[in-house]
Image 1 (cartoon, rainbow, N blue to C red):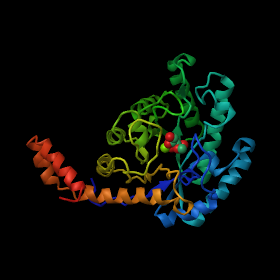
Image 2 (image 1 turned 180 degrees about the horizontal axis):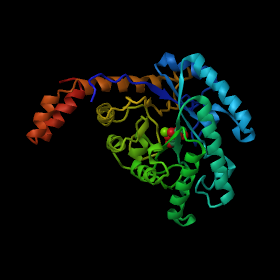
Image 3 (image 1 turned 180 degrees about the vertical axis):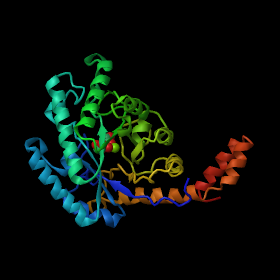
Image 4 (image 1 turned 30 degrees about the vertical axis):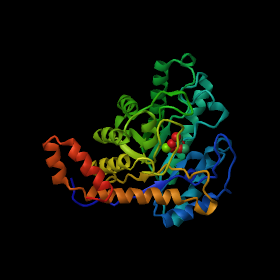
Length: 348
Ligand code: 3MF
Ligand code: MG
Protein backbone atom coordinates (compact mmCIF):
# COMPACT_ATOMS: atom_id res chain seq x y z
CA UNK A 1 0.00 0.00 0.00
CA UNK A 2 1.30 3.47 -0.86
CA UNK A 3 2.41 5.61 2.08
CA UNK A 4 1.18 8.75 0.34
CA UNK A 5 -1.92 9.97 2.22
CA UNK A 6 -5.04 10.00 0.07
CA UNK A 7 -6.33 13.44 -0.80
CA UNK A 8 -10.06 12.91 -0.71
CA UNK A 9 -12.41 14.58 -3.15
CA UNK A 10 -15.95 15.27 -1.97
CA UNK A 11 -19.25 15.25 -3.82
CA UNK A 12 -22.97 15.71 -3.30
CA UNK A 13 -26.09 16.01 -5.41
CA UNK A 14 -28.28 19.06 -6.01
CA UNK A 15 -31.07 17.32 -4.01
CA UNK A 16 -28.90 17.74 -0.90
CA UNK A 17 -29.71 21.45 -0.91
CA UNK A 18 -33.46 21.23 -0.66
CA UNK A 19 -36.53 23.06 0.48
CA UNK A 20 -37.42 21.01 3.54
CA UNK A 21 -40.63 19.33 2.42
CA UNK A 22 -41.37 16.02 4.14
CA UNK A 23 -44.29 13.57 3.80
CA UNK A 24 -46.24 15.62 6.37
CA UNK A 25 -45.56 19.18 5.39
CA UNK A 26 -44.71 21.46 2.50
CA UNK A 27 -41.49 23.25 1.67
CA UNK A 28 -40.14 25.72 4.22
CA UNK A 29 -37.24 27.26 2.28
CA UNK A 30 -37.25 28.98 -1.09
CA UNK A 31 -35.75 26.94 -3.93
CA UNK A 32 -32.21 27.60 -5.13
CA UNK A 33 -31.62 27.28 -8.86
CA UNK A 34 -29.28 24.58 -10.15
CA UNK A 35 -26.89 27.26 -11.43
CA UNK A 36 -26.71 28.86 -7.99
CA UNK A 37 -26.20 25.50 -6.32
CA UNK A 38 -23.24 24.84 -8.63
CA UNK A 39 -21.61 28.05 -7.44
CA UNK A 40 -21.68 26.73 -3.85
CA UNK A 41 -19.72 23.52 -4.47
CA UNK A 42 -16.17 24.89 -4.54
CA UNK A 43 -16.85 27.31 -1.69
CA UNK A 44 -17.90 24.37 0.46
CA UNK A 45 -14.84 22.31 -0.54
CA UNK A 46 -16.57 19.98 -3.01
CA UNK A 47 -15.33 18.98 -6.48
CA UNK A 48 -17.87 16.45 -7.69
CA UNK A 49 -21.53 16.69 -8.62
CA UNK A 50 -23.88 13.72 -8.36
CA UNK A 51 -26.87 13.76 -10.67
CA UNK A 52 -30.19 12.18 -11.27
CA UNK A 53 -30.84 12.09 -15.01
CA UNK A 54 -33.53 14.77 -14.59
CA UNK A 55 -31.33 16.95 -12.35
CA UNK A 56 -29.20 17.30 -15.48
CA UNK A 57 -32.05 17.31 -18.02
CA UNK A 58 -35.40 18.22 -16.42
CA UNK A 59 -38.44 16.77 -18.15
CA UNK A 60 -36.37 14.33 -20.22
CA UNK A 61 -39.32 12.01 -20.83
CA UNK A 62 -40.79 14.63 -23.16
CA UNK A 63 -37.56 15.21 -25.11
CA UNK A 64 -35.90 13.40 -28.01
CA UNK A 65 -32.50 11.76 -27.50
CA UNK A 66 -30.91 14.57 -29.53
CA UNK A 67 -32.54 17.25 -27.36
CA UNK A 68 -31.46 15.41 -24.22
CA UNK A 69 -27.88 15.21 -25.45
CA UNK A 70 -27.83 18.92 -26.29
CA UNK A 71 -29.15 19.86 -22.85
CA UNK A 72 -26.64 17.58 -21.15
CA UNK A 73 -23.82 19.18 -23.13
CA UNK A 74 -24.93 22.58 -21.81
CA UNK A 75 -24.74 21.22 -18.24
CA UNK A 76 -21.24 19.91 -19.01
CA UNK A 77 -20.22 23.44 -20.00
CA UNK A 78 -21.64 24.78 -16.73
CA UNK A 79 -19.61 22.20 -14.80
CA UNK A 80 -16.47 23.06 -16.76
CA UNK A 81 -17.08 26.73 -16.01
CA UNK A 82 -17.13 26.03 -12.27
CA UNK A 83 -14.16 23.63 -12.37
CA UNK A 84 -16.44 20.77 -11.31
CA UNK A 85 -16.85 17.22 -12.60
CA UNK A 86 -19.85 14.91 -12.72
CA UNK A 87 -19.34 11.88 -10.50
CA UNK A 88 -22.36 9.83 -11.55
CA UNK A 89 -25.84 9.96 -13.00
CA UNK A 90 -28.73 7.93 -11.55
CA UNK A 91 -31.92 7.21 -13.53
CA UNK A 92 -34.80 8.57 -11.43
CA UNK A 93 -37.09 5.61 -11.90
CA UNK A 94 -39.44 6.26 -9.01
CA UNK A 95 -41.49 9.35 -9.94
CA UNK A 96 -43.01 8.54 -13.31
CA UNK A 97 -46.58 7.21 -13.59
CA UNK A 98 -44.93 4.31 -15.48
CA UNK A 99 -43.04 3.13 -12.39
CA UNK A 100 -45.84 2.97 -9.82
CA UNK A 101 -45.45 -0.82 -9.69
CA UNK A 102 -41.65 -0.71 -10.07
CA UNK A 103 -39.24 -0.08 -12.94
CA UNK A 104 -37.30 -3.12 -14.14
CA UNK A 105 -39.51 -5.39 -12.01
CA UNK A 106 -42.95 -3.95 -12.76
CA UNK A 107 -45.45 -6.68 -13.55
CA UNK A 108 -46.45 -4.92 -16.80
CA UNK A 109 -43.97 -5.55 -19.68
CA UNK A 110 -44.64 -2.08 -21.17
CA UNK A 111 -43.64 -0.40 -17.91
CA UNK A 112 -40.52 -2.54 -17.71
CA UNK A 113 -39.67 -1.36 -21.21
CA UNK A 114 -40.15 2.26 -20.10
CA UNK A 115 -37.58 1.67 -17.33
CA UNK A 116 -35.05 0.32 -19.83
CA UNK A 117 -35.59 3.19 -22.29
CA UNK A 118 -35.27 5.73 -19.50
CA UNK A 119 -32.04 4.05 -18.40
CA UNK A 120 -30.65 4.32 -21.96
CA UNK A 121 -31.31 8.08 -21.86
CA UNK A 122 -29.51 8.21 -18.52
CA UNK A 123 -26.51 6.49 -20.12
CA UNK A 124 -26.59 9.08 -22.93
CA UNK A 125 -26.41 11.79 -20.25
CA UNK A 126 -23.53 10.02 -18.49
CA UNK A 127 -21.60 10.10 -21.77
CA UNK A 128 -22.34 13.78 -22.41
CA UNK A 129 -21.37 14.79 -18.87
CA UNK A 130 -18.00 13.09 -19.30
CA UNK A 131 -18.31 10.61 -16.45
CA UNK A 132 -18.46 6.83 -16.51
CA UNK A 133 -20.69 5.86 -13.62
CA UNK A 134 -24.40 5.13 -13.29
CA UNK A 135 -25.84 4.73 -9.80
CA UNK A 136 -28.85 2.45 -9.53
CA UNK A 137 -30.92 3.08 -6.45
CA UNK A 138 -33.59 0.44 -7.07
CA UNK A 139 -36.25 2.47 -5.29
CA UNK A 140 -39.44 0.68 -6.31
CA UNK A 141 -37.93 -2.70 -7.17
CA UNK A 142 -39.59 -4.59 -4.34
CA UNK A 143 -43.01 -5.15 -2.84
CA UNK A 144 -45.64 -3.69 -0.55
CA UNK A 145 -47.10 -7.15 -0.14
CA UNK A 146 -45.25 -10.39 -0.67
CA UNK A 147 -47.82 -11.91 -3.02
CA UNK A 148 -47.83 -9.05 -5.54
CA UNK A 149 -44.72 -10.13 -7.44
CA UNK A 150 -42.56 -13.15 -8.02
CA UNK A 151 -39.29 -12.43 -6.19
CA UNK A 152 -37.29 -15.02 -8.12
CA UNK A 153 -38.45 -13.74 -11.49
CA UNK A 154 -37.73 -10.18 -10.31
CA UNK A 155 -34.06 -11.07 -9.90
CA UNK A 156 -33.97 -12.32 -13.49
CA UNK A 157 -35.58 -9.08 -14.71
CA UNK A 158 -33.06 -7.00 -12.78
CA UNK A 159 -30.23 -8.99 -14.33
CA UNK A 160 -31.73 -8.67 -17.79
CA UNK A 161 -32.02 -4.89 -17.34
CA UNK A 162 -28.41 -4.62 -16.17
CA UNK A 163 -27.20 -6.68 -19.12
CA UNK A 164 -29.14 -4.56 -21.59
CA UNK A 165 -27.60 -1.40 -20.12
CA UNK A 166 -24.10 -2.89 -20.23
CA UNK A 167 -24.59 -3.77 -23.89
CA UNK A 168 -26.03 -0.36 -24.80
CA UNK A 169 -22.72 1.38 -24.07
CA UNK A 170 -19.46 -0.35 -23.17
CA UNK A 171 -17.83 2.72 -21.65
CA UNK A 172 -19.58 3.03 -18.32
CA UNK A 173 -20.01 1.16 -15.04
CA UNK A 174 -23.03 0.55 -12.81
CA UNK A 175 -22.93 1.02 -9.03
CA UNK A 176 -25.97 -0.45 -7.30
CA UNK A 177 -27.07 1.52 -4.21
CA UNK A 178 -28.80 -0.99 -1.93
CA UNK A 179 -31.51 0.01 0.53
CA UNK A 180 -33.70 -2.44 2.46
CA UNK A 181 -36.97 -0.50 2.57
CA UNK A 182 -38.64 2.85 1.89
CA UNK A 183 -40.44 3.52 -0.34
CA UNK A 184 -41.11 -0.24 -0.46
CA UNK A 185 -41.91 -2.50 2.46
CA UNK A 186 -39.15 -4.80 1.20
CA UNK A 187 -36.63 -4.13 -1.55
CA UNK A 188 -35.20 -6.90 -3.71
CA UNK A 189 -31.61 -5.71 -3.33
CA UNK A 190 -31.44 -4.74 0.35
CA UNK A 191 -27.70 -5.06 1.03
CA UNK A 192 -24.37 -4.82 -0.75
CA UNK A 193 -24.09 -8.61 -0.59
CA UNK A 194 -27.18 -8.89 -2.78
CA UNK A 195 -25.81 -6.20 -5.14
CA UNK A 196 -22.43 -7.86 -5.52
CA UNK A 197 -23.92 -11.30 -6.10
CA UNK A 198 -25.95 -9.78 -8.93
CA UNK A 199 -22.79 -8.09 -10.27
CA UNK A 200 -21.00 -11.42 -10.59
CA UNK A 201 -23.89 -12.83 -12.62
CA UNK A 202 -23.88 -9.89 -15.05
CA UNK A 203 -22.49 -10.29 -18.58
CA UNK A 204 -19.51 -8.14 -17.60
CA UNK A 205 -19.03 -8.41 -13.81
CA UNK A 206 -16.08 -6.00 -13.94
CA UNK A 207 -18.50 -3.18 -14.79
CA UNK A 208 -21.00 -3.74 -11.98
CA UNK A 209 -20.28 -2.71 -8.40
CA UNK A 210 -21.84 -0.74 -5.59
CA UNK A 211 -22.46 2.48 -3.75
CA UNK A 212 -22.98 2.17 -0.01
CA UNK A 213 -25.07 4.66 1.91
CA UNK A 214 -24.44 4.61 5.67
CA UNK A 215 -28.11 5.07 6.58
CA UNK A 216 -29.26 2.32 4.22
CA UNK A 217 -26.90 -0.19 5.87
CA UNK A 218 -28.08 0.91 9.32
CA UNK A 219 -31.72 0.51 8.24
CA UNK A 220 -30.84 -3.08 7.29
CA UNK A 221 -29.54 -3.57 10.83
CA UNK A 222 -25.96 -3.75 9.55
CA UNK A 223 -22.80 -1.85 10.31
CA UNK A 224 -21.90 0.46 7.41
CA UNK A 225 -18.15 0.04 7.86
CA UNK A 226 -18.47 -3.74 7.58
CA UNK A 227 -20.60 -3.32 4.47
CA UNK A 228 -17.96 -1.01 2.99
CA UNK A 229 -15.20 -3.44 3.90
CA UNK A 230 -17.10 -6.22 2.14
CA UNK A 231 -17.42 -4.20 -1.07
CA UNK A 232 -13.79 -3.07 -0.87
CA UNK A 233 -12.60 -6.66 -0.60
CA UNK A 234 -14.36 -7.34 -3.91
CA UNK A 235 -12.90 -4.20 -5.51
CA UNK A 236 -16.48 -3.01 -5.92
CA UNK A 237 -16.90 0.06 -3.75
CA UNK A 238 -17.21 2.75 -6.40
CA UNK A 239 -19.03 5.44 -4.46
CA UNK A 240 -20.41 6.14 -0.99
CA UNK A 241 -23.26 8.12 0.46
CA UNK A 242 -21.99 8.98 3.89
CA UNK A 243 -24.62 10.19 6.32
CA UNK A 244 -26.08 9.09 9.64
CA UNK A 245 -29.22 7.50 11.00
CA UNK A 246 -30.57 7.42 14.54
CA UNK A 247 -31.91 3.88 14.78
CA UNK A 248 -34.58 2.10 12.79
CA UNK A 249 -36.98 4.75 11.59
CA UNK A 250 -37.52 6.71 8.38
CA UNK A 251 -34.45 7.39 6.24
CA UNK A 252 -33.12 10.43 8.09
CA UNK A 253 -30.06 11.40 6.00
CA UNK A 254 -28.51 13.09 9.04
CA UNK A 255 -25.12 14.74 8.80
CA UNK A 256 -22.28 12.23 8.71
CA UNK A 257 -21.19 11.39 12.27
CA UNK A 258 -24.05 13.32 13.86
CA UNK A 259 -25.76 10.30 15.46
CA UNK A 260 -22.85 7.93 16.15
CA UNK A 261 -19.31 9.26 16.03
CA UNK A 262 -17.66 5.92 16.62
CA UNK A 263 -19.61 4.29 13.80
CA UNK A 264 -18.55 7.18 11.55
CA UNK A 265 -14.93 6.83 12.65
CA UNK A 266 -14.97 3.18 11.63
CA UNK A 267 -16.34 4.06 8.19
CA UNK A 268 -13.57 6.59 7.61
CA UNK A 269 -11.05 4.04 8.82
CA UNK A 270 -12.27 1.30 6.50
CA UNK A 271 -12.23 3.69 3.53
CA UNK A 272 -8.76 5.00 4.36
CA UNK A 273 -7.27 1.55 4.98
CA UNK A 274 -9.04 0.03 1.97
CA UNK A 275 -7.46 2.50 -0.44
CA UNK A 276 -10.79 4.16 -1.22
CA UNK A 277 -10.29 7.27 -3.34
CA UNK A 278 -7.05 6.12 -4.99
CA UNK A 279 -8.83 5.35 -8.25
CA UNK A 280 -10.67 8.64 -8.22
CA UNK A 281 -13.64 7.56 -6.10
CA UNK A 282 -15.42 10.47 -4.42
CA UNK A 283 -16.46 10.79 -0.80
CA UNK A 284 -20.14 11.44 -1.48
CA UNK A 285 -22.44 12.87 1.16
CA UNK A 286 -26.16 12.15 0.96
CA UNK A 287 -27.27 14.43 3.77
CA UNK A 288 -30.35 16.54 4.37
CA UNK A 289 -30.71 19.74 6.33
CA UNK A 290 -33.16 19.62 9.22
CA UNK A 291 -36.58 21.06 8.39
CA UNK A 292 -35.96 23.75 11.02
CA UNK A 293 -32.92 25.07 9.12
CA UNK A 294 -33.16 28.65 7.90
CA UNK A 295 -32.49 29.46 4.28
CA UNK A 296 -29.17 31.16 5.04
CA UNK A 297 -27.95 27.96 6.74
CA UNK A 298 -29.06 25.50 4.09
CA UNK A 299 -25.56 24.18 3.33
CA UNK A 300 -24.32 23.85 6.92
CA UNK A 301 -25.12 20.12 6.98
CA UNK A 302 -22.82 19.63 3.98
CA UNK A 303 -20.00 21.69 5.47
CA UNK A 304 -20.48 19.91 8.81
CA UNK A 305 -20.41 16.43 7.28
CA UNK A 306 -17.23 17.22 5.36
CA UNK A 307 -15.61 18.73 8.48
CA UNK A 308 -16.57 15.69 10.57
CA UNK A 309 -15.10 13.37 7.91
CA UNK A 310 -11.82 15.26 7.92
CA UNK A 311 -11.67 15.42 11.72
CA UNK A 312 -12.30 11.68 11.92
CA UNK A 313 -9.66 11.10 9.25
CA UNK A 314 -7.20 12.84 11.57
CA UNK A 315 -8.33 10.47 14.34
CA UNK A 316 -7.69 7.49 12.05
CA UNK A 317 -4.25 8.77 11.08
CA UNK A 318 -3.21 9.52 14.66
CA UNK A 319 -4.42 6.25 16.14
CA UNK A 320 -1.55 4.58 17.99
CA UNK A 321 -1.29 1.36 15.98
CA UNK A 322 1.31 -0.20 18.29
CA UNK A 323 -0.88 0.29 21.30
CA UNK A 324 -3.85 -1.08 19.42
CA UNK A 325 -1.89 -4.13 18.22
CA UNK A 326 -0.66 -4.87 21.76
CA UNK A 327 -4.20 -4.72 23.14
CA UNK A 328 -5.43 -7.03 20.38
CA UNK A 329 -2.55 -9.46 20.93
CA UNK A 330 -3.42 -9.58 24.65
CA UNK A 331 -7.10 -10.08 23.73
CA UNK A 332 -7.77 -7.11 25.98
CA UNK A 333 -10.80 -5.80 24.10
CA UNK A 334 -12.02 -3.92 27.19
CA UNK A 335 -8.73 -2.03 27.15
CA UNK A 336 -9.06 -1.56 23.38
CA UNK A 337 -12.54 -0.13 23.78
CA UNK A 338 -11.28 2.33 26.39
CA UNK A 339 -8.41 3.38 24.17
CA UNK A 340 -10.64 3.91 21.11
CA UNK A 341 -13.30 5.86 22.99
CA UNK A 342 -10.74 8.02 24.80
CA UNK A 343 -8.93 8.64 21.51
CA UNK A 344 -12.21 9.82 19.97
CA UNK A 345 -12.88 12.02 23.01
CA UNK A 346 -9.45 13.62 22.63
CA UNK A 347 -8.24 12.21 25.95
CA UNK A 348 -5.56 10.00 24.34
C1 3MF B 1 -32.66 7.32 -1.22
C2 3MF B 1 -31.37 7.81 -1.66
C3 3MF B 1 -31.35 8.53 -2.98
C4 3MF B 1 -30.21 8.09 -3.85
C5 3MF B 1 -30.15 8.90 -5.10
C6 3MF B 1 -29.03 8.51 -6.02
C7 3MF B 1 -32.31 10.70 -3.00
O1 3MF B 1 -32.65 6.83 0.06
O2 3MF B 1 -30.39 7.68 -0.98
O3 3MF B 1 -31.22 9.91 -2.69
O4 3MF B 1 -28.99 8.17 -3.18
O5 3MF B 1 -31.34 8.74 -5.75
O6 3MF B 1 -29.07 7.17 -6.33
MG1 MG C 1 -28.30 7.78 -1.27
